[in-house]
Length: 416
Length: 178
Image (cartoon, rainbow over all chains, first blue to last red):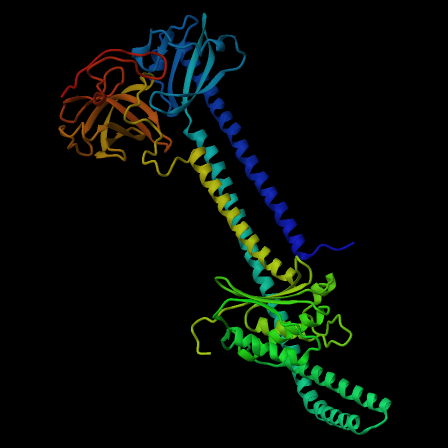
């Protein structure tokens, strides 16, 4: 079974933690309302007790007139007929209640409570409680300010908002950290590849000196033999030697290209028809079945890449495409310009790339041809990345393979 | 290699989606503030009360105290002063500045006043008294509302009407006594 990666574990942990925090925040917020209600109910019961004691001691209710408590908006005593027996505003004592909200309290076992809006615009808590006085039962209409209770709900909501904000912040921060870490890993890989290239470069330089010279001699003598030998069979062997020597020279050149330590992006090239013709002339000389590409390019495209490296890039891409097509096939080359990048596409009418070839097309020494060095597209990637671009391979919709190259345009009108 | 480009694009998309989600969460938090009780920060009236037209006969009291903060305009153009009472300080709301421009409100801190009006507690936790009549430090009585609670600046002293939330409405007319 495949073990989950560190990022998957981190992401799962983060999601679980976020779900837990959201649950915690929401449940705290939901619990705040009942807590606030209980606070108001408790206060109402305490006040009812006090008012009942005061009223029982003084049946004229004069003692109630002096009773004040900060959280009381007002209170009143109402009898069964709806007459106000006492009101904090003395002008209302003796009048009749204009509503019947108090009535259910006479028969209800628990206080009848509701939220009301006073004429001042204040939202208040209203509770109707039975008041058992000597000889009669009255209803206490108690209206309380809710600011204290609201504070409980508000604090819970502040907590929720804070938690949501911190969670969102943690996700953004975490994502940035992961991005930074990935970038660091990429940088290290690039550094390691550069070091590997430097070592290969040294090896390539040795090969250039140590292998190229004898190869030139072998090739020269083989060609000489081919001319002088009269026996057909032996002449064929000499021709084969010369042919293989040429292939070995090509391999050494590719290796040298691949290991070359330069900055291909340090320049600017005008990609026009003349430049492509020049590229094509080289390709035509090397390939056995040249098929001139169908061009679709915009005029005056300036690419931030040195001319000889861009030429090398196009030669490799076109050669690669030509080697993939059957006799009579077609190769297309297009160049388009978007806001930030220039897109070069080289498409062929060949069989396309397998899944493995799509993944490994740009790896050095990976080839699907018997006689290929496997360095052509690897050199392409090195040039493109050196210019600050991106190269990718895909199978085109209409069949065949397509290599897509994104390259940056020249920053300013540099002299070519 | 197309896979590499797609991964890069997906990474950028993921980043923007995360940023958008974070902003959404913050906005939700902000909305919650406004809806659930912190008050709308754009509303200059932090009390949540109807200071200009609000009145409730059930909460009417007559109280005396000394001026703690001289009359000044509140946000919304209403004039108010702070009244010092034993153990607390309340805000006495008078009325619109344009209505009181002819009154001499040059009251000093510590001057005694008696106010009758409707008490209310604002969402900011402060106690407000929406005044009906005031006996000013000079002894003059300023009538700002009819007994029904309708403000004088809304015609409350000319004609009757019902006021208050609940227990009783009232209907006497009045006059602007100054």
